[in-house]
Each structure stands twice: as C-alpha cells, then as structure tokens.
Image (cartoon, rainbow, N blue to C red; front, side, top):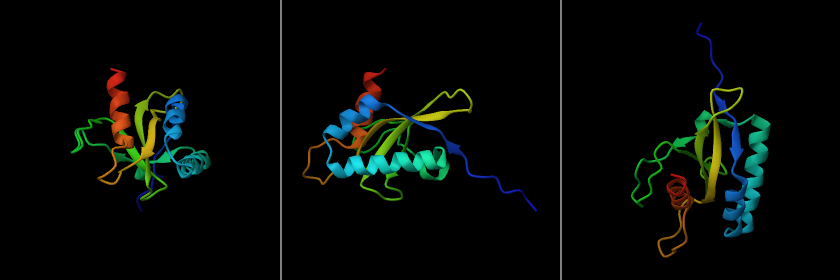
Length: 127
C-alpha cells in the first residue's frame, strides 16, 4: 500500500505596511476577512498547497504577476484575495510573503483597483 503524504503547507509572512495601506481603502468586511484568514493560517501552520493558485504571467487586465501565487479570502470563492511571492525561510525550503490584499474583481463600472492591479504596481516598483 502506498504511503499517503500530507499536503505541503507553506509558512506565510505579511508585508504589514502594504496590508495596512490596502485596508485603508477597503470596507470593514475586508479587515474582518483578513483577520480570520490570519487566524486560520496560524492554526494550520501556514497555507496548504491546494489553496494556492498560480497568477497569470500576463492577464487580460494587463497585470503581469508571473511567479506569484494567490488565494481567495475566504476560501474557496471569497470576494477578497491575497497575492504572495516566494521568500526564503530559515527552517523550511521556502515560505510565502503576502504583499497585496483586496477585492478580486470589481464591477465593470468601478474604476477601483483590484488586488491584482495593486500587486502588479508593487512588483514593478520593487524592480
């Protein structure tokens, strides 16, 4: 009988300055969703692999987030999302750093930025 391996769980850190900035422009429901998400990550010891989705190298909205991963908050189809980059970890092969949090998709008539547009701008600013 084949041994069943547990699903990989990746440690997660947060760019607190970026997330504080993100929460300033979001409704209170976003702060509550992020708080619950962080509690869940502490309980699980990180984020399970199955809850991560690869970001598109280039999306229809013009964002380029190749090499990043995302998750939906709350899982599995929440209104909000978090975008992560891989970082080094002292005791594990890798970890993730959340550097953008926000609404995944706005109605067409809205000109507010999505979490993906915010992540795109932050990535480009850091290069």
